[in-house]
Length: 310
Image 1: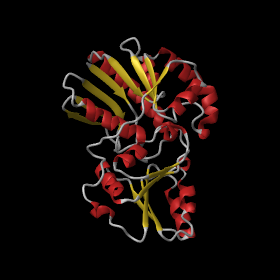
Image 2: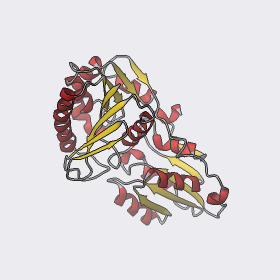
Image 3: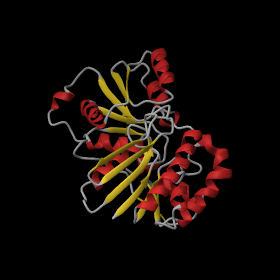
Image 4: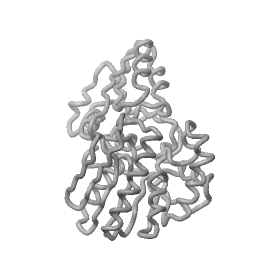
């Protein structure tokens, strides 16, 4: 079986969808009869190709500026380049399926290639109309009409939570299957020894994810005010980093900003923490929460969407 996979996010670029894609490829690598070609974005200013086992990764140069933030020009440029590249691949290879991460622009590319192969759409969050308040005008005049066409013609539409599915149904009443995110239990697991969690005076809180507004990190930092026994470790990067650092300094609370880390390093820090906190308002299913639970951490979370389902 040959699969053409389209995702503008792939580590080190992006967040949850990038990580989910990474681990899906890792699992598919266990099946020698499955060949996967992934078309994604390059973190450098050049085209890159990686071949390993049964997968090929094509990284298109879109002059990416920030690994954790997307602009509409960047997404649009990737959409144009990815369509041209995928069209060329489809002319050379016989694919059985096109797996589109995000309804747009990947889903739109899948729709355009429908004559060559069936396609499925994996909804992730911001690609669903109504999810991101910043895109309200774009939702009404562009994303909703495009989404209806793309979803209606897809062989399967998949959401990663019931909350995201219900939001998508407001755009088009169609058959949407829910498949929650997974976690690699070989990588994320409780510490073998209790040395990492030796009892200390301070309670070590940890949270992982992009430092953006909807993640609620500002509320989390404010909650630490006048709580000297708590210290917070934030793993991730994003547009809110300086604002959050400034807030922590003004409130005189103990927050460590570790920036972007690879999966192994994240697992080590989770194993050493006491409590995982997720203050996100997003309705998608959070991979970071699953990773923390897999490491045996007690969790404090907001009662929303995919988090409630877990």
